[in-house]
Length: 166
Image (tube, rainbow, N blue to C red):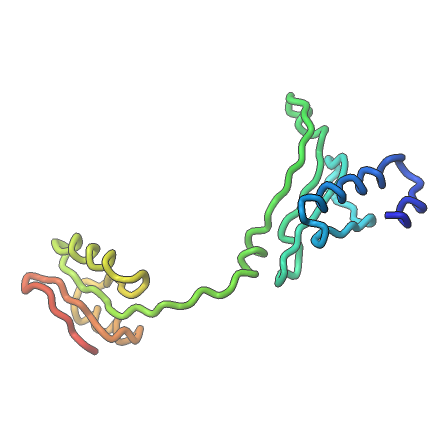
């Protein structure tokens, strides 16, 4: 900040404002997460003060960006000070650990009048461990289960409930 103050030939108080901003954020426990880039310029001209970007470990780009835009709301008939930001949801999602893939253990083949029972069974099993067959025939359901490597087919029809091991 001292070097920036010495080089500042622009608006008086700018570095003081950044110093105050830093101190307040530091008091809130964020000192280790703040870096100032006095060369950062935003392409959008409605910003009137500080602009910022947020980064997370594992992202190769900013996941959040925004700033002050105190004059923008006045253009819409309601003058007010404002700060806003946008989040790059794709960049955030790319940083999340891969979800553990759950492999279904059973495909449920059901006749239309047994849909309620089929849904009851799906709801009673751990998430992702069963799936309803989209097939109209039992033969198609058995082929689907084989293709997916699912070891069981639960059949719900006029004969009741039975399981076929594949």
